[in-house]
Amino acid sequence: MKVLLINGSPHKNGCTFTALSEIAKTLNEENIDSEIYHIGNDAIAPCRACGACAKLKRCVIDDKVNEFISLAEGFDGFIIGSPVHYASAAGILPIFLHRAFFAASRTGKNIFTHKPGASIVSARRAGTTATLDQINKYFGINQMPIITGRYWNMVHGNSPDEVLQDKEGMQNMRILARNMAWHLKCEEAAKNAGILPPAMEEVIFTNFIR
Image (cartoon, rainbow, N blue to C red; front, side, top):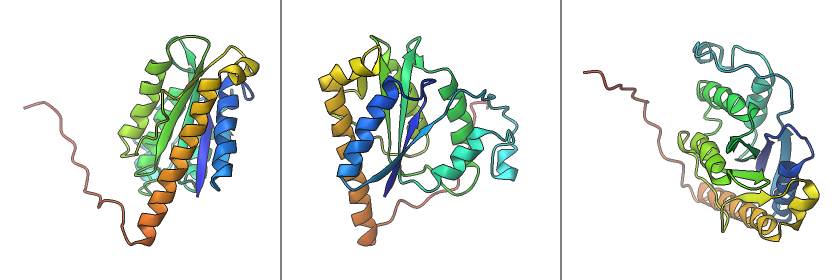
């Protein structure tokens, strides 16, 4: 079982990475493999809404998004981390996730469907719950169970050293990791017992024009 930890911060080894590293350490203690994927600072173009991914089975814009989609296929759970910028996720992250989740949904492989997801954020002060809500919407629309901790999944600090001093926040990263590990182990036990994910219906699209 493997969990992909997505670092949506422009700083590869900053506050968000510090929180994700605590999660990775705890997952390892629970015998769950993990990998931290840094989106980076390369320019990411927004979705063109062209629909070409339905035919190509990948995004028509061939950049890091396609790399991520290929990587994500091999993982059983996902944790997306972001700093808070203007009471929302880091600018590049929504652009990246828009294309990744939309194109992946067109591959026909159910890369994300029914796999557990969690969001974590880092902030100097405020805007955390709005950012968590923003990221969680990607899970909700893809039938992904959302994993929580014992409090909102956030750490506070203006530097990695300050984040490490947020004892409650760092503890919650560990609790979140154990909850993710427990969920994955329950899924594995269910699979071994012959309990399969829900059957998928053909999607029906409607609008409000009468």
